[in-house]
Image (cartoon, rainbow, N blue to C red; front, top):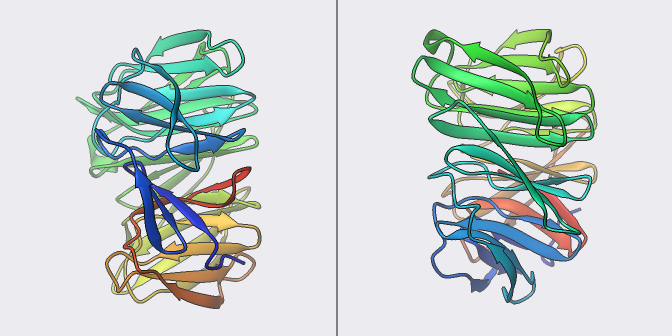
Length: 294
């Protein structure tokens, strides 16, 4: 269960502990989400990629060549001791042991999604003629690329990666599950609602914050695309996370409230109210346990 001792690392990077602001870095760039791995917090600003001490924000090292990709782009992620990040023109991998890097170009004008898993890396972004989703090996070699026509997307394109599947979600409500290695479609689903925030993927479920006549969180089986459960929430949420067996749902601008849902069936288990408004993208229960909220 997520309680008052949680630490939230938000876009910025700002840190909120026990609902109170603790520290933040200057020149926070475009609000990319940080990630925590091996006791180090990684984030990007306009000037480059930073490795920070999570408790007080002290800079440990930086790479000036890995600049921020732009507003509302995805932050860095870690797979197999490789830190994967996006710049305005490239996908970059940094070996966390040697700090050697590889770099490969992506064909989007504005990258909106980046995910990494044991079977590869995927990026998604908006292009001149719609959108593009690309798959890469863990060494940066491009394996495949999919074009998505303008009629199928809105202003954003989100991705999540788990096991054999890449789930691609547009804000017009189309959900595709693609194979991570070759990009072939496994299944497709259509939501009746608009997508208002980034999804989450955990324990075989794809979780979507959506808005129709009412705001809700939808859960789908990641293997077959079947609807698992839907839970109404009183306000829109731009981010979801899974901590253990619960889903954390911060409610945007609603008296700093955060709801906690059962991952199994979506029932409401608890609500919390924080002194600090959470534009939360990460919730951390310890330095070794970080959960994606964006």
